Amino acid sequence: MKNPFHVMLIPTLGCPGRCKYCWSSEEGSPVMTIDTVRATVEWLKGFRSDRVTFTFHGGEPLLAGADFYMQALPLLSEGLRELNPEFAMQTNLWRMTPGIAEILAEYHIPLGSSIDGPEDITDSQRGDGYFEKTMKGYEIAKTHGLLVRFICTFTNKSMKHRKEIFEFFKDQGFDLKLHPALPSLRSENPREWALEPEEYGELLVYLLDKSLDNIGRMEVMNISDLCRCVFTRRGSVCTFVNCMGNTFAVGPDGSIYPCYRFVGMPEWVMGHLRDKPSMETLMQSEPGWLMRAFSEYVDRACKDCSHIRYCRGGCPYNAIAPTGGKIESVDPHCTAYRRIFTEINDRLNRELFDSPGMDMGGFGMSGSKKQAKPGIMALMRAIVER
Ligand code: SF4
Ligand code: SF4
Image (cartoon, rainbow, N blue to C red; front, side, top):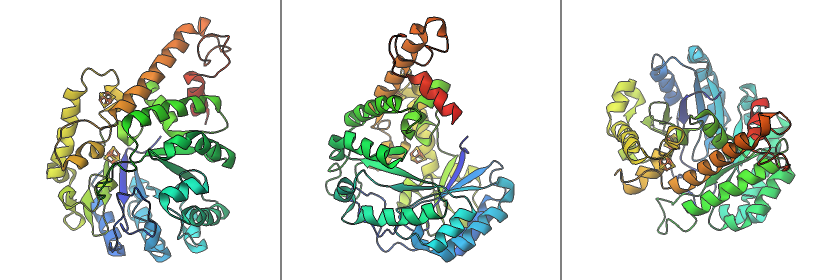
């Protein structure tokens, strides 16, 4: 089970990469000091009592260096022992060194990194040399026993190479997590790389089929999450739950935001560590009010949608940030969510109704017993077994 309480620590918004669709890095961004980590510990004492996950995110969190993690991890881990902290990190791995890998391994920190498929596709989207540098870091991480999973950003350009990208991940023995490229709020041509909602929906259905064809051999994590949502009728990742109040991000200067995606946008600051704000104070801030208003908007806008319980209008950042804080719609990826949720529901219903006696031989197969292709139930069984 994922911990619902999630604090993202953003040691810096700086990043040595130059990914073409990036919307979050910032040149010249300061690096978080250890005093800010200490202030995080003080803020969280008594803030909430349930288990917390800290994710180091960026920018590029490894720019903070080995000394930062050698001090920060024991401070968080011991200072907040009653919250049983767990850790994760999202990094491009370029600055991975044996020294950093050792300290991350000591705290069993799973790493998320990013490649967009084979070297030529990755470098065409993320800049020359990206793939090689990430793979070098990956080797160091692997040698030290660190678990690394790769996120693949699909753009409107790489969408055409989806088969090649999927096969690449499969050949490498990597599970696949995907992100749709978002319109960049910092670019003059924000949609240049963005994956449009219709294409995203098409991609998800394609990957659903690929997941079912490869059960036990390769996991497409988004598909597992989407099936889990439908099966349990509850959101299983932040996009599909009310994330406010459960997720916060701390920027390099100690400002507190609703999520890492807002870090560096002054209008989205909810408070500051130095004031040790309570949950109530944060939720009364302008961004806190906006996040709540988004949830109420979803209750109205999505009231007739059969997926509302486990979709919740998608990601508030996607919905509100591009409009400069005006709540005018749900997450623009609604079209994609609706398509994939409907597809999973329809297939699941067909399996349940077409599975004669639901005997274990036919259970989990798509359509009638004659069809050998595993279905949603088989995928759910594989997820549970894992
Ligand atoms: S704003 Fe979006 S990305 Fe951030 S926690 Fe909420 S759902 Fe997740
Ligand atoms: S699929 Fe679209 S309409 Fe349905 S709950 Fe999600 S965002 Fe709302």
